[in-house]
Length: 78
Image (cartoon, rainbow, N blue to C red; front, top):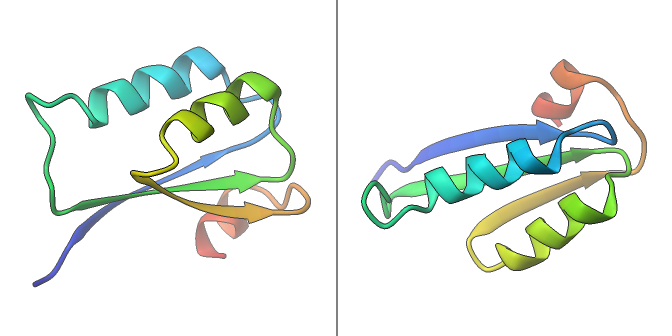
C-alpha cells in the first residue's frame, strides 16, 4: 500500500502558532487520514515553544533534525 506524506520544514524563526495550527488541522479527527505520514524537518535549532509542540505530537509525527540551518530546499531533500 502506498502511503501519502506531508513534508514540512521548520527553523528558528518558524512561528509556534503556525506549527500548532498545522498540527491541530492535520490531526483533527474529522479529517485525519490514517495513511498519511507527517514528516517535520527541523532545519537547525528551533525555539522552545516549537520543541514543546513536537514533544506533544511525538507519537504521530516523524522528525528529522539537521544540526544547522541549510535552507528550505536542502532541508526537504535531506
